[in-house]
Length: 369
Ligand code: AMP
Image 1 (cartoon, rainbow, N blue to C red):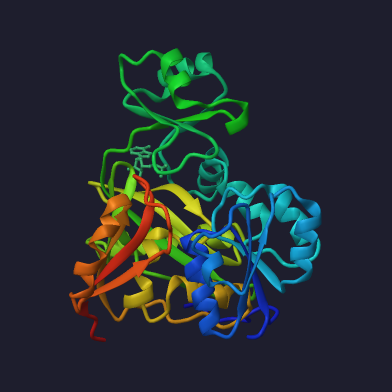
Image 2 (image 1 turned 60 degrees about the horizontal axis):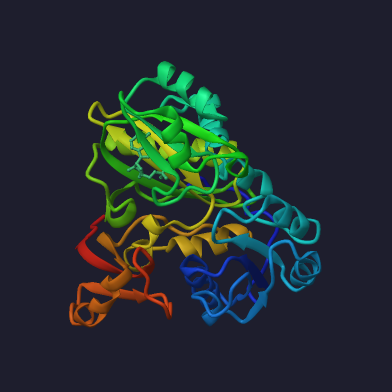
């Protein structure tokens, strides 16, 4: 941890505004409650995970300026639990009350071209990429980047949505149509395919005083493009772990994040670390910290945005976090019988294929230090 000033204090008893109503907001609200804060959720749909555990909820569209002004008047600081909140919404709230991480951070993180360019400007490696506006530009980019490569929408892609694999025989026009990129997504991005040995992520926190703390790098395994399992710690050499931590901290400081920054990275067989994407919010790959960390990512977010000293980011024990996706949630009863398993259910009433319904953290070997 890099100790320093904490920034202006928002003391326990204050109200934290959260934009978004999913499980990340729910777990943030629970951590906030443990430190004596109340949460006020601003959301576009009710009866969802975060609203069930928050003191107050405002149900309104993100472009309802009167509702935003009323919300901002009733909170002391605002954060967000998913990154596609419109920048105009964030700026509107920021006129009245601090928004952490700032709208300028969100503007980079919401746009794959900007986030990769930002990393490259700091000397941090990513897959080679080209911004593409139409299928002709895609054909030119494929000629430059080569195949295999991956076409993605610049904005609004998640869990593999808006992604198309490009091979030597791919027709650019068909790939462009299949991707769904257009003006509404700020176009597309073609990325060179990274033949990675493993995917890792690392979450760092920074408060307004510039104090930073980094959690350990963890390995993420996906099923059907959705995070399936997180293994903490990642089984990578210390030098690779150190490189990943340095990258995440440089991005966090470069973006002047106040809050959390989750950084997803590829590790190649040669040990090179390439940034794939950043998310300025709690991250699914950090859920293990609730049960196995000395400070959870959610408590760390509350500490960072409220100007409190950051918590110890080290772990009590190794852990494997397994998502309960769709019908997986039906297995909850069996996990409750396992003393090494911690069960987290998100309170979602409707089970849908691909929907994150909860997670289990399996506790492993204690860390002795
Ligand atoms: P993303 O939406 O960028 O997080 O991508 C979802 C998943 O697709 C990643 O977790 C990787 O497994 C895979 N992927 C994305 N971009 C690339 C790439 N440039 N090379 C190889 N695999 C990728």
